[in-house]
Image (tube, rainbow, N blue to C red; front, side):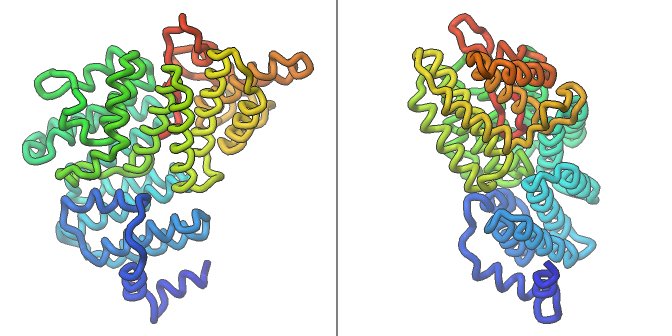
Length: 434
């Protein structure tokens, strides 16, 4: 590690070496292109822009602690070289800190990612689009951490910010900025299970409901949350259209580039992975299991390529695939117990589920919703086997005590009968069950 630092920051290295490396590096991969999408709309230091892109590519090249540490060193060097005054420097510092927060998030350092986002908010004059991106990311991180009340407070602050600075939002891209702020509040309400409250968050300026052609849905995060609302409301056909719109990457072509900025679990690639996963779940809920398997496999491949095969996000997708096989077996009166159990065991391992001896109610469980759902599904597999029923009951007891969803019980989430009115959706952005 010290060798890397000396090469980057030493007398023959430093800024010039980083820029040279960045200039000969390969074209930006889809994993790092999200930065390019968001910097077109504001003037940045061009050297810093190269350094940011190089740092992201370097970090994800090996998907290891070492490569991420190297990327963070580049970003720290970039941040330290920015002038103290001027709008270009302010814009550049904002983008560097957003990139740092995203890399910290990808390595599971959520508290440190939040600190970097707060550093952006503390800058003297970040653009309105950046302020919304910061608050949107804070909402997403606090939701993933199970801090729903904090998320609600941040979402409210974001809406109040837009009210105060409404004059600034009157220009190009204002529809998207407002839609993102309202969608952040809508996502909080989705997690809380308040569908009636959610609907008001997805109305246009004239109180009209969004359509798949709405300018607000050009932004991936707003579109995905709206699609989830439609999905939960059992408007499957429109939800499918919205999910497909996100997957097709409409947000990458938007002219309002500044308003497409995103960080941490609200970054553009996270949105695309989550939309693919949601569409796969929707096809499963419709009984189109062949399509569901194909789409969820794509989501798994994309997630592994971006995060690495041992990342907890992979466990999220594996849980969705296991549930798809479970629902398929029930609908088709077939059996896939071995497949389901293998997927669920791997999922809970990647999700770093605590030992069963840890009390579900008291223990701090990361990604609690999905871990409880996976263990609940695993418990049902074990309980139908006489010689493993005891193990299944222990899993079931843990899962039920860990379950926190306000909209449905664990048994309702696992119920895929025709009579069930509940449709559970796993949002892989925030690792929560809606």
